[in-house]
Amino acid sequence: MDPVAIPAADPASGGLTTGAVARLLGVAPTTLRSWDRRYGIGPATREGGRHRRWTGADIAVLRTMCRLTSAGLPPAEAARAVLAGTSRDAPVPRPGRASRAPGPLPLGRARRECRGLARAAVRLDAPAMDELLTAVLDRYGLPAAWDEVMMPTLHAVGRKWETAGERYIEVEHLLSWHVSGALRAFSAARSAAPGAGVSLLACVPGETHTLALEALAATLAQQAVPVRMFGAALPAGALEEAVRRTGPAAVVLWAQSRGTASRSLVARVAAIEWGVRGARRRPVVLVAGPGWAGEPPPGARYPAGLADAVDVLATLGAR
Image 1: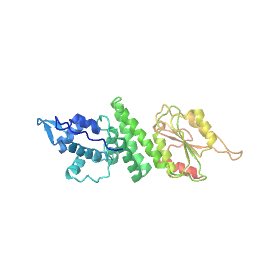
Image 2: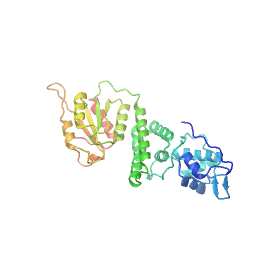
Image 3: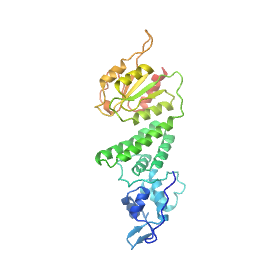
Image 4: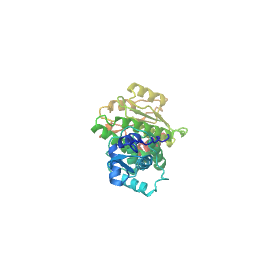
C-alpha cells in the first residue's frame, strides 16, 4: 500500500493544523503535541508564534516517527534516531490512513514487537500490522510469536475494550483479522506427513473465539501434522459426526468461558469408536482454553499452552 500523499500546505496559513495532520497519519492530536513538547519533533513554523502549522517536510519527519514507534521503539528512542538522521534505512513499516487513534494499550513491560503491534493496531494501520506479524513469525517461529507478541497484544486490546466501552471494538476486530491472516499464510505451503493421525480442532457449541485454535492449527501444519480446523461454535451433533467420519488421533475442544465448557460433550466425544471389531479405537480428547481451568473432565488432557499441545498432538499423530 502506498503512503498517503501529503497535501499541499495551505498558502493562507503556511501549513496544516495539528488536527489535520493527526487525521492524515492516524494518530491522536495529543500525541503530536507530546512529541513536539518532549522531543522537539515539531513544526518549523507557528501561526502567530503559538499555533502549530505543519509543512510537508514536518509531516515527513512525523511519518518516520510513526514507522519507528510501530516497529516497537519507545518514542524517546525513535525521536533521537529521527533527529540524528539515522532512521532512513531502518526496516520498519509505513503508516497508512487511519481514523483518529485512541490512547495507548495496557501492555506493561511487553517486548518491543508487542508494543509496536499495539501502536499499529490502535492507528488501524493495516500495512504495518502485516509487516510486523510477518517479521515476528519469521524471526521467532509460530509458538513464540503467538505466546509473546500476538496473544499479549490481543489480550491488551480486550482489556481496553472492557474498560472503554465500544471505543476499541474496531481495533480488536482489525487486529484479530490480521493475526488470523498471518497465521494462515505462515502455514499454507506445508503438506501433512503421510500416514500421520489427524487432529480435529473445534470450538465447543456457543464459543466464537477461534484465534488460539488457529495458532494451534498453523503450528501443527508447520510440523506436517494433519489437522482439520472446524472453527467457531461447532454444533455438538456435527462435532460427533466429524469424529466418526475422520477417525482422528485426537480432538481438541476450545472453550473461552466456563459457560461454554461442556463436560458432557467431552464424555460423548471420548466414547466415540471406529474401526473393525477387535481393533476399535477412540480419540484422545484435549480441552483447551480458560473455560476449562481447574480440574479437567475425566479422561481429558489439559495442555499447559501452545507448545505443550503441539508436542502432545504430534506424538499422538505419529502413533
